[in-house]
Length: 193
Image (cartoon, rainbow, N blue to C red; front, side, top):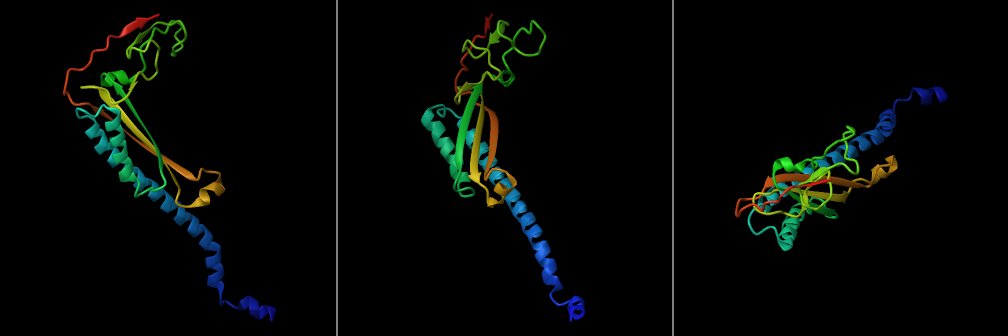
């Protein structure tokens, strides 16, 4: 009887499928999660690019205009990720060169600014900044870096079993120059020691 059962091949494919199905399902879930993230990223990037272009026009430097532009981005992404939370940030600079850290005299040659070293305050706040951007849309001819970060629940809860977060974070940024609808406000860099 045992010999006959050992030679019986009926149901062998069911056993093979039972061994391979969990691996296949995990692979498919991972692929779907990756594709979903890529799709959400593409939608966010496209919506942000369109909104950033709109933000460069005259009259969009107000808080209410910025909120309306943010809402337009979120409305584009919400059908893809309905339970999202989001954060937006706008920093503006006088020119593209101003995106770097404020220049300073590196007296001790350690490649970082230490207290007491002189620096050029390009944004007028009286402090040395590694990112001298000023919050907001800025004015005419300013460079605005517009960033939106969204967080949404993953498609499948299995990431928690692997120790990963059950939420996915994606972000998109755009750096565009505001339209020349007026004369650019002139900030005078000040040397501070």
